[in-house]
Image (cartoon, one colour):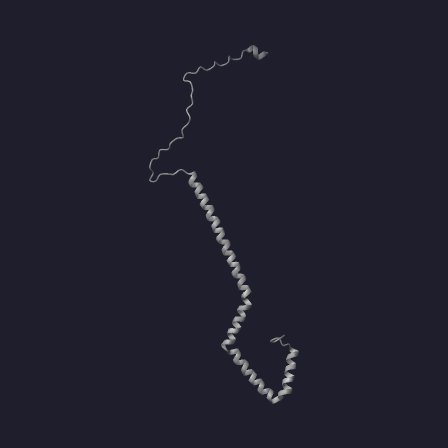
Length: 141
């Protein structure tokens, strides 16, 4: 466990040096002073802002990934909507082209029949006579 990059062995070494330099009585005063100073820092608005900013920075990659995936999803949804709209428009155009226009209010409509080419047939044609019925002689042969 490290606190501000200082491990347990380094912290012990700092306390021993402070005890040697300050002595036991001055060490108590320094501990109280240091405690008051740290309490002021922790309860200050600046520290709260620092903690909030630190949390935001830690959560930034996750938030950016969520926003990026949402943007991609929105883009895909818009593309799908465009494709569906195009296909619906195409089907509607095909239906309009294939269906005749119907009149409104049940009005009678005269539909023109397609014109057929005139076939030239003679008025009086003589058909060939039918073949004679088969006789009994042809059956036995």
